[in-house]
Length: 123
Image 1: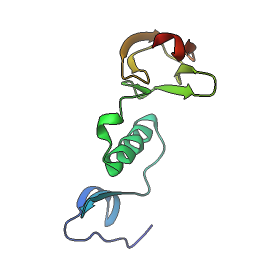
Image 2: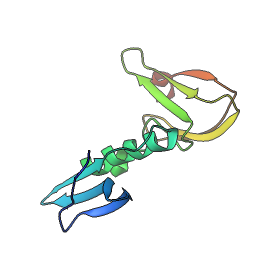
Image 3: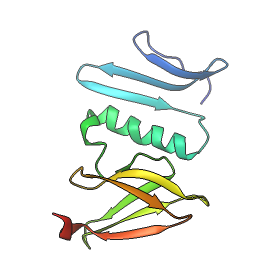
């Protein structure tokens, strides 16, 4: 959006010209994040993910169903008790993933690899 301006206590994180593209603010017990005009990329998707947790005040819960590598996603399916780890690239990737208990596991993933796990058996 054009002509967005920030209140005095807002932290401006990114601008393009005169346009605010990324800003964060706290007010009372709440937090807000403004994102606009940032193109899609794996890195920017991670930025959006982190912004949601920050705005909710739940940063400590971010590393549940999480990958440290921006190119890798971790998806949990509660109805089946299964989760998968997906390499979204055409290159091999290494990462550390975190399951629903926050347990970390190092992984090597082949290009476009999808790896399935039974979460209920890992408790």
